[in-house]
Each structure stands twice: as structure tokens, then as C-alpha cells.
Length: 64
Image (tube, rainbow, N blue to C red; front, side, top):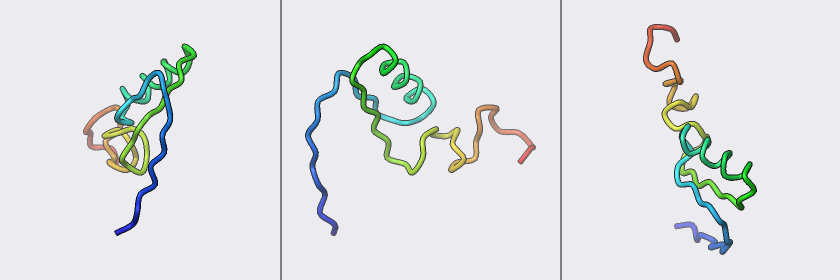
């Protein structure tokens, strides 16, 4: 098992989840000047709307 490195940092706002709402919340927070972190477990942001899942903002449809 790979040993994990622990990094201690201080933020004013921490967003958990990189879906659409998490990305929007992190951007809004940072634009207001808050020291902001976003924590994401997947390989790319967007949640179910990412190209990783292939369920885009328009939802399920017959177009690929």
C-alpha cells in the first residue's frame, strides 16, 4: 500500500465535490476573495456532467 502524504493548510471555504454546484460554489467563493479549496475524488470536474460519465448538462437524450 502506498503511503499518503498529509498536507496541512488553512482555508476560509472548503468545497467538497467537484460537480456543477461545487465548481460554481468554489468559483463564487474565490471571486469574492475567500481563500478557497475544492476537494474532488474523481479524475475530472463536472460530476455526472463530465465527459467521464458522458451525461451532459442537457441530460439523457438520443444524441451521442
